[in-house]
Length: 570
Image 1 (cartoon, rainbow, N blue to C red):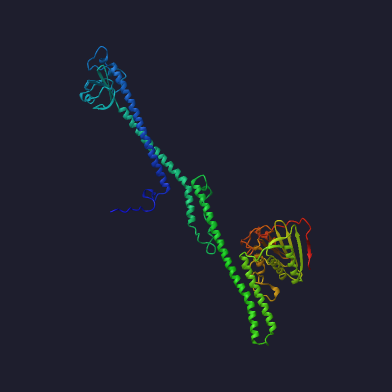
Image 2: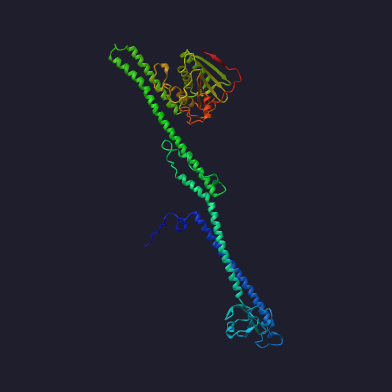
């Protein structure tokens, strides 16, 4: 029966898991301490074994030298022949080390005689038990370690010459004491050094981890911020997010790199939140405009429909109530008004999609001249003037009918909202960089409260929608259509107004240039409302009210005489 293989659970193995409940401030000193202990242990052991080998080697060399001296001074090795076995003159010589053992060996390794140099310097013979501890050593010069009762541990060697062997030994107590002292010194030094190194490492690590702690605190504070609130439901979170201080963003350190990265992330978060808030605000404004558009469109359509229904009811009651011819004429007029409003709304919808019926080269000079002549015919009680400042032919690529509608709407706006006798000057400027149409009048100007919304749809000075006559206002779509057509042609439109002077400016790209700087000319201009400082308020009070997207730079002076210089059409 085959056994099925056991699947290991996903994730890290037990040995790969870092210990929980320990911070980096605790793990780092512990790791450093363990490392230092290991290094000190290896170093101490190395020093111990090297020093021990050196001391034992030195002791062995001294034992060998002493054996050679014993061999030379023993009478039995001279040419006169062997002496008695107990004749050991070497220990009696001056300058022998304390504890030195000298003796003679028989052929079978038996120590027949041995003497030791005691602490008082008077050599004495070894006892039988002490000599027995030295038996069995071969006279080949090799070194042996033997423990002699009452004397301690010795390093012993034996040398033979002419059949007579001598034995010599030195105590290892001095070497052992030196090694023991070395171990004690190493242990004390290691403990003191480890304690000092541990304290220093703990202090240094804590100091080095302080920036990381501050970064972590900043991250924790950011994570605790209410990022899901803002705008209308709460304070804007993008204005109060905590950042890592500049001293903790040094790119030369890892903590500084983390701090700098966290600041960049906070910047991205703030940018995203601000963008989301702007998007929500724009959606709210769009919804508000849509509701206002639906309300205004419903009202504008309801008025002619109500008129048509009223005339139809009167005709149904009989011919005596109203003349049929008059009724049908009024019904046709209201129907035409309703048709025009619907067509304007459809035009704005197509322009919002960026669709133009057709595009071709159009001459702005001829187009504007035709529009001024039409305006003169419609409003003879105004002073209409035309000026052409052309450095180059005023040619653009676009829908000529729609461009004519833009100029016609601006002139109709000037005719309907200025008193009789107002001078309206229309000029065309053409340079290599742009084509500019200006419509300026010396009427009462646009109310400052209305100026920021002048290009919005259904924007009228008469907010009550009551118009006693045809001259009192239109549907509020004329300037919105002009702005939409201008934007669809890659241009921009703006207005500056103050009492006694109102000027609309239209900038269009010349042939070969796709568009000018992109701006929102349908809902523009929209400015952020803020409380000005006294200095700003004083400066703004000295400037004329203006709404533009944005204001064009002044046109360069013509390099030649204009084609038509201020032609009066009064």
